[in-house]
View 1 (cartoon, rainbow, N blue to C red):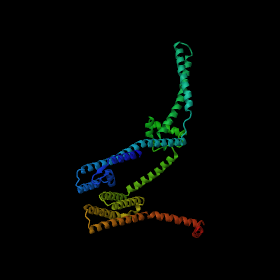
View 2: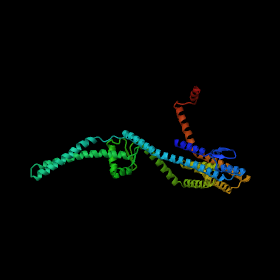
View 3: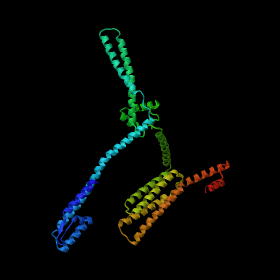
View 4: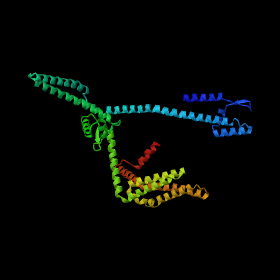
Length: 417
């Protein structure tokens, strides 16, 4: 912002120093001040032309026009510099922002791992024992070879000792590898505790079967306190919360699959849904050619109402008889009205009769939307009936058990007033 102010001050100062002398008025004038008042090149030049013609002084006209163009170009350049500076600022801020987001994700992930994991123990202890074990194994083998080459007895003791120390070193090496493997798996999951087995295999350089086997072992040993492997061994979830979401999605998925099967087996329902989708596509295509924003908004409302009706009839397919006239007359008529409006609007002709027809169509679109909403209410009325029935049964049972009476409820309500 400081550089912009600085450039503006220099610009103003430069043009004030380049003020011009007017012989007719015997005074100096600042052409930039005139330009800044107008902020419109065409009106400024036009006014200058009028002044020159009235005074029949055409000599300075070309110079004045060129100066005005120069000033306009300078304005554009300063705005361009501002845009470039803004973009430069964004390019400087974005890496800082991305780095901060990455840091926050790292912090959140560490908090999650602290809560959901227990690292395998004994990493540094294993390193402390592994190194001496392998050193002793090497020494034992060397001594055994020396004893053997010199035909000295007891060389077998050193060979056995070397094998023993190698085995001990291998045990500690496996423990170290176990700790490192666990770290690689925690690095492979995201900050929410989610990981795809295939991605984890790629990140750790192991086969999918090896990853699954290791994860199951870590879950069994309690290293992943709340770990779960789901979806036919393709997804790993590190928390019970994620697993709960997963189970909820399974229930929803099963319901959707059941609903799709019901729709597929119900040919009338399938035909109705296909007809609705077909009409929606036509309505969208027509709306794209209409310029009137108000009509476009009405079309969006009608489209939303049709989608709501489709969702409702999927839930209550036994109510499909209510929609016989909806599919055979209401929707086709809606499409026809919109086509008529589009054709009238495209001609660009405005007469009292044409304008009245357009207003009538717009009004009819509102009526259609209300009619669709009432159809939706009729389809969904079963919900209200079920709820009222449940309430009535509950009140009856409570009354029979002496736990409810209308008089007591009215008396308690009056007590609060």
